[in-house]
Amino acid sequence: MQNIRVALIGECMIELSHLDPDRLALGYAGDAFNVAAYLARSAPVDVQFVTAVGDDPYSAEMRAAWADRNVGSALTRVIPNGRPGLYLIRTDDRGERTFHYYRSQSAARALFGPGHPDALDDALADHDVVYLSGITLSILTTSARARLLAVLDETRRRGGGSRPGRRGGGRGRTW
Image (cartoon, rainbow, N blue to C red; front, side):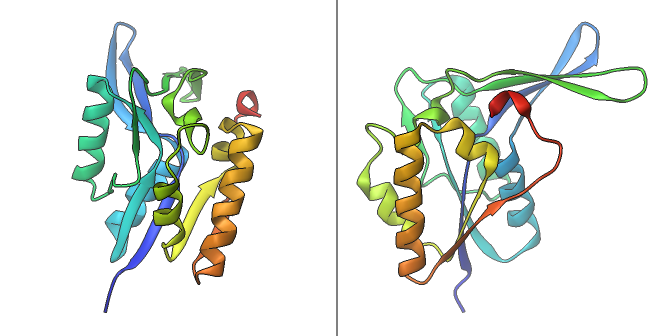
C-alpha cells in the first residue's frame, strides 16, 4: 500500500530564542512547518513542504533540518538572493512568550506569485491531502491567493482534498 501524500503549504522561519539575556538558540519553525514535522514523525505518510526559501546558508541549513525530520522539500522553490523570515522569542519572568517578527521580505511571500512554476502547481494538485493555514494565506498577495485557490480546486478535481488549518493564538500583525 502506498503512503498518503500530504503537502503542507506555508513559511518556515529562522527562530531565535533567548537562552539568557546575551545568548540565543537557533531553530527553524512556523505554523505549517510544525504540522509537517509532527505529521512526518507520527504517521506513515509522504510529507512535502511547499514554500520558497533563499539561496543563503540559513535556507540550506533549514532544508537540511527538514530532511532530518523526514519532511521533503521537492516542492520548495529556491529564490536567488531570497532570505527566510526570522522571529525572536522572549520569555518573561512568568513564562509568557513574546514573539518579534522580521518577515516582510521573506522568500515565502513569493509563493504562487510571478515566477512560480506551473510544474509545482501540477505536482501539488497530485497530492492526497493539502494543508495550509490562515497565516499562510495572509502572507500571499491577492493574485497569489487566487492562484493557490485554483490549485486547490484542481487538487479536489483529481480526488485529493484540502482544508485550511485553524489555530488559536492569532498573530494580528500578519492580518
